[in-house]
Image (cartoon, rainbow, N blue to C red; front, top):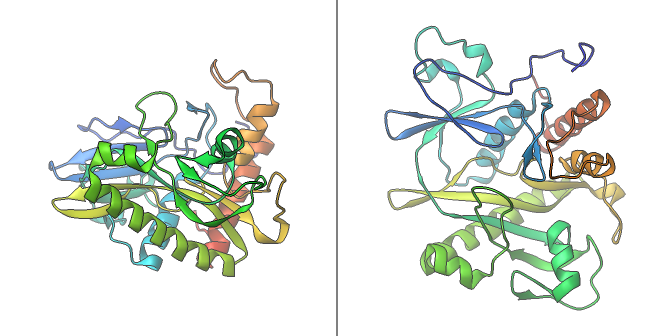
Length: 301
């Protein structure tokens, strides 16, 4: 990455002395004391099941801080306990500046092993499935809907949590078989409730939340939201002023990166190419714009 855009250090990996992290696509996860997890949002970005070789400066901070905003705004029960790194149990000598703004210490939960997706608009894989079957995850939809059209009401479209490769869309009955009826009903109810509340708030700020993905876990018998929450990485954010049914939508999320990769000639089967500087900075700008509009505050790196 050229020096003219790398004004802040891009955090692609983190290390804590004496602690072995679990590396997710975007997060580094550390376990403390057996019942606490430290989730560090790095600046890695993934697309098409690949972690890209180029990071997006400050992306992890944006995701972490936006999740905290939504937790507080919507009053959803969540895993997070602390975001101030000075009050976290880091070993002596740890460079806290690496972790500041991008880290959350939370309750270690038993993960509900499905992805909880709520869709308000007919976009992405849902559009492809609808064109083929007239359904999404076994839910029959009206005929004649167009790409990116608003659905009659938000729908819950769960998917598997694949360890490798793609998550696969499943029906609600299949979700019940995986997690049990009571848990499936609970995560569906909470997911739709959170989506509706967030969508109403965002629309007042001229942002459409087309769809989003939640993850849940149990702390003893309590169901909590875990991981990120309503961020540009886990959601499709569209500009209400430029929204048009039947067309590709300008977005505040990483669809911008996906589009560039698709048009780059990359075959999606071999290691992905480096992102050009202009794509990196445009992506950063989109994430920051979403943060500023939704939180009504400036992003401070």
